[in-house]
Length: 287
Image (cartoon, rainbow, N blue to C red; front, top):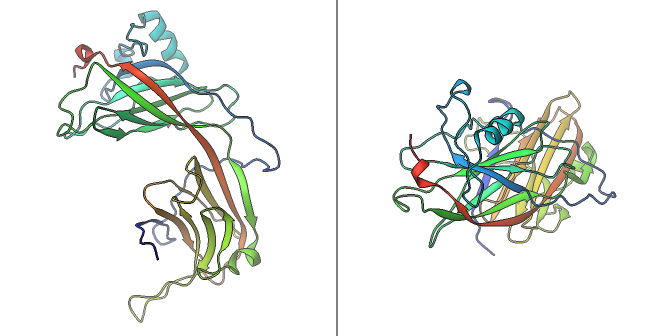
């Protein structure tokens, strides 16, 4: 038996549901168009304290050539350049990357960057925009490992190449009949089942849990999996399982008296693009 680390996102009705905006999944029988690699159009230093009144930041192209004030102002009119990356004392200043995404994308695209140093890499975060074909990403290394930003850095970016696709849809009877001992194989590495957790205290009452379990060693590494549970009384939970170890699980307790209207398991496909020698302009890295 293999030993794996387990990451669970517990969602309870007592403390509220973890809600992630759920996009309408398209028909799996329709082959989705593959979106092109995002274009890196601007780089600049994060400054969460910068106000809109202070004007847009100094920005440059990935090759290091500066954008003119007119170009930055034009970009600012299209998308908000005032980032929301929260500075942390133990990390260097966040380097922000602005991308233009494929105009065919019908939903917001969240990009995940990984900054590559000589013997160290760090995973950053991303923020999509609504109704505009742009996406922001950024990250920063720990000061204890990288004392200062180099003059350039390589970046790998994980980006969606499709809209969300439905993999399996279950009604109440179909959803509750699967167990941990005999789960429903949704696709390779992805299982759905119901299980009854064991109470820690005799007086404790625990509801059965509907669970989507993803073994990231077997599942498609270029997919994220979504679980959407719609109850008959309109309560809805939208959850996403992303690779952060060997095994991930997202689940929802379901009271026996409640009926499931629909369990929808969906996926988004990704690719990874590499951007080499992205200029950082350390001389502009001033608070």
